[in-house]
Structure formats: structure tokens, C-alpha cells
Image (cartoon, rainbow, N blue to C red; front, side, top):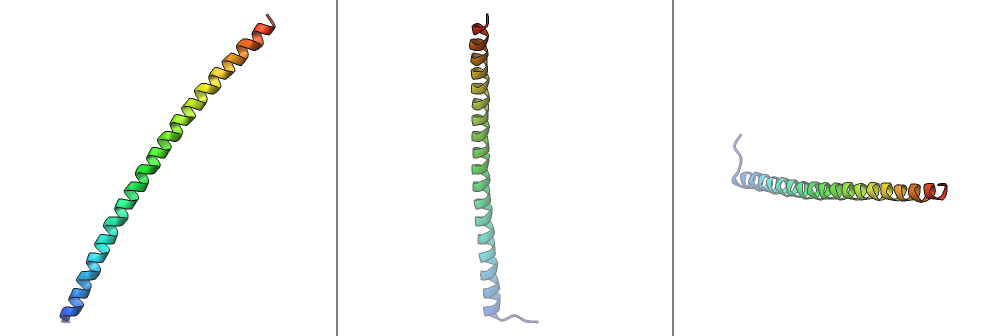
Length: 70
């Protein structure tokens, strides 16, 4: 089976398009993954701050509560 020149060029163009599309898709995936990791790290920081604040406030409450009954 012998392909004509225009068919070969068409296949080359299609291959180039697919490679470019794949490269752009991988770049978009990596960017989104990086943003997701940053967001998860930010959430972890917020949770840590929340836990520390909650522990501090609980301790303050217990201190005030027990001072009333001493």
C-alpha cells in the first residue's frame, strides 16, 4: 500500500497535533496538581491553627471555670 504525499503530510500533521495536545495536557495536569498540593498544604496549616486555638481556648475556659469553684 503506497500512501500519497498529501496523505503522509496529513498523518504527520495529525501526529504533530496529538503530540502538542499531549504536551499541553500534561502541563495543565502538572499545574493543577501543584495548585491542589498548595491548597492541601494551606488546609493543613489552617487545621493546625484551628486545633491550637481550640486547645488554647479550652484551656482558658477550664482555668476560668475552675477558679470560680476554688
